[in-house]
Image (cartoon, rainbow, N blue to C red; front, side):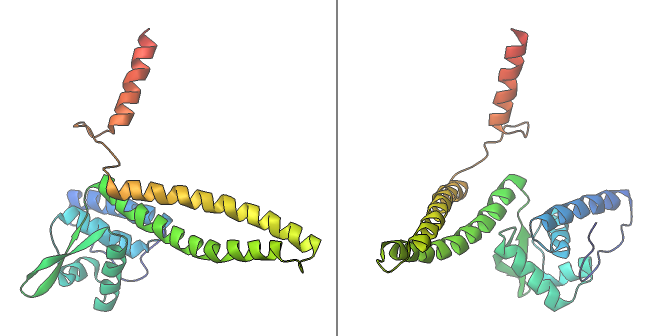
Length: 203
């Protein structure tokens, strides 16, 4: 288990807080798997359970983190769209609110991460593919170099088709309700699939 790089949560005072701390630790560990600092994951977990707007000062009290580190942590969570800065203020202090719907948090977090990947890769592909094409058509390019360029071009065009698909996937995540959740909390698609399986088993 990884530990915070700065700051430390207050020790739990009762059984309920102990259970919260256990879940917050799990949230921080899982977010760490996807490149989010463990301490920032803890902060999101704290805000998740608070389920209300919080000021930086309140977060500092919960995390025992310096103001500068706290500000950076909040900016990171805002960048991942796990936390939102509200327009209203409390006694002139900025207020921040965590996304507590895990379905929406999943959509926001991964759409942001995937879009970053798409932007970085497509930026490189947009330069490399035309340049390789020019080298292939250049009469001064040797046959061996042309062959190698063709191999690279084939791989990069395949990569480009993947990122075109991934961009469509991200747009779908951002523009639609990607998960249709039933009242029981399970995805309708999953619930429907389970129902079909039960019907098949009963035949």
